[in-house]
Image 1 (cartoon, rainbow, N blue to C red):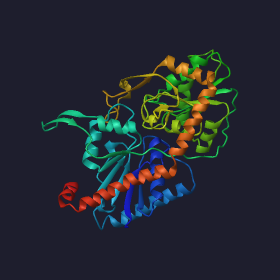
Image 2 (cartoon, rainbow, N blue to C red):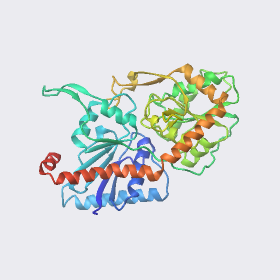
Image 3 (cartoon, rainbow, N blue to C red):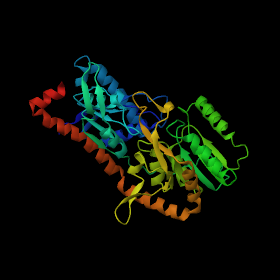
Image 4 (tube, helix red, strand yellow):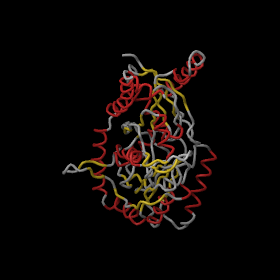
Length: 427
């Protein structure tokens, strides 16, 4: 079997969700280097910082980046750029997709709302041979979004939707040895939130409502791991000012807020998830493509205070005795409504898109339930942990991803035997 040259364009060094997605893809493809000859182009992802790890994986990434640069520099003068590789894997949002190779696969986190932008469908249909996304929520939104209207030259179209295949691959578990952080906990009833401070994550309400519920409880604490856009000292100061300004609304509070900013290793996170005083991870974001901190906390056995909506539904459910999937979480009720005006992001979050709004009273009740029904929710968390560890192994998820990518290669090979299909794909 001839190995295929695959070029991966991704924010592979970014400390972001897309960065984690890119590094997962690399691990999966590296597991089958008998199939793939891997080349790599690093791209930026917003203002996010870069990873600082120096282990084997980082050394391999740096080497592949160098070798890709030299390969392209040497061969682009000899042949057209789009023929240098057999296929591309582009890990980004669809408006950044491009026709790079004979076969092109878009690997996107998708969307946290109820619909994708028209340009996402257009780019996917015109440029990609397949889309891979990370949750059934994202897949469903891609498949169910339809547009009707007129083209720029006046032609009408009805129910324009996704026209290329789409698949889902979740993330695998990664067990880490815990390593202590320098946090001097003076509280025994602690909760954890890990979110960038933006509109979608709903962090203002997460913190404010927590403080309102525990303002008279000196033994309650909230660990807030956050940033505004990156891990710089300036970002640390800006984010701290935001937090102080919010907490100034509660001058007499007795509960404790622990602020974390900057690089936190997987080992440090494991320590937080497993800390004996940690009662639950909180996430009342308006929507998630997947929800990696939720996933990590779940397979570390920490109860989850969250919504039964969007990407996290792929892993927060476990079959009950009747075989029906049931969320094993501390549920927060929610309403579905239009995104806020300030959340609209051209060609990403559409103004008519919808997402979830956590109900304040339900959230506060859930926080109390964690403490008052601790034995029950610890049992639920253990059941969910065991379910995830059994069903989201690296071996299984890596295979799922490779099968999705290799399936496109095989389908293309079959098309090559049909001159008409080959002509259509090239044109």
